[in-house]
Length: 105
Image: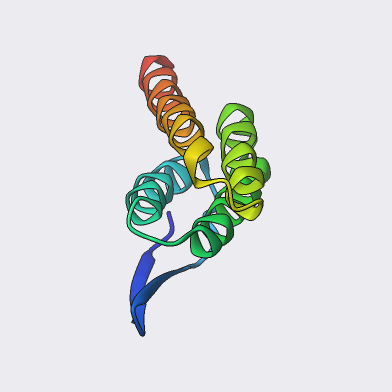
């Protein structure tokens, strides 16, 4: 499992994380990153989404990877109006992955 540290940088915050090595670590980070994304500007949201995309890809969490990648594309393009739907999709992907993980023996 990873540990995420949120460090203030001026008026912004940045998430500093050791790359999670397993799905449980990605899910732990995902919740924190989504919460942080909700409070940050588009540039920071794009950076956080990129981190989450890479972590999800590394552990095979495909649904989270795709949803985080969509958030990255939208935030990178500066389209804040469209971001709400992508953030909702990401949150739903995380919730479904958590449910699936709990249902597995």
